[in-house]
Each structure stands twice: as structure tokens, then as C-alpha cells.
Length: 127
Image (spheres, rainbow, N blue to C red):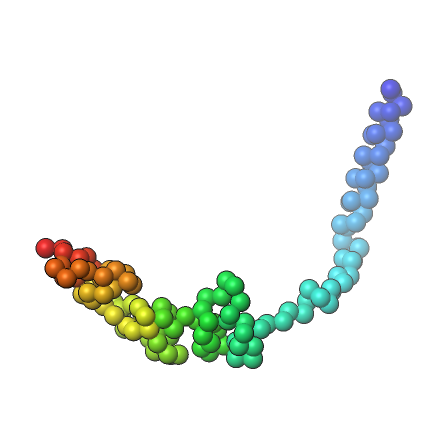
């Protein structure tokens, strides 16, 4: 049992000395080997590869300024590339609308007020 403890202590001392020697100032860092597969990154933009916007999980199926967008709901590209909705308006069905007063998009896209109520402050039948 005593020899087992001595062997374990000797192994710990050797491991400690190896780690100290490895990080001493005189030793250089090992050279980093670049993995070609990991360092070369292929960027697929929709201007060169239009089908990239149709991949599952894509933001939208339309391409504007090398990015996939949804022209029906994107406030920076509402209905067509580059058309921004003004402050206070949102993009619904490709048109910039005011959600505080629009009867078809009251408060959010697709929230339609019925014929008897009106949209006030983004709520149907506020008053």
C-alpha cells in the first residue's frame, strides 16, 4: 500500500513538472495548424444563388441587397426592395399601414375589426 502511494505521488510530481516546463517563458507556443475545411467559409448570397431564399428556415423568399426578405412583412422592404415604412407604420401584405387606425390590420397584421366597431389606438371598439 505504501509503494502505491509513493508511485502516485511520483506520477503527480512528474505531471506538475511537465506542465510547468510547457508554460515556461523560454518555450514557444506550438504552431497552430489551420484546417482548410474550417477556415474557408463559403457565403451563399441570394444575388448569386437565388434558391438560397427558398431553403427551410429562411427569413423570406425574396432577395433584396444580397439578403433574403419577406416583402409582405418586412418594414424595410415593404412590397418592394428598399421601400421603408415610416415611423408608426408596419408592413402588412406588402403595404405600409397604420396599426392604430387601420380597420383590416388593427394593432397587428390581419386583425380585422368587424363592421360595427372601428379601430382606435390599435384596438377594435375602444370607446
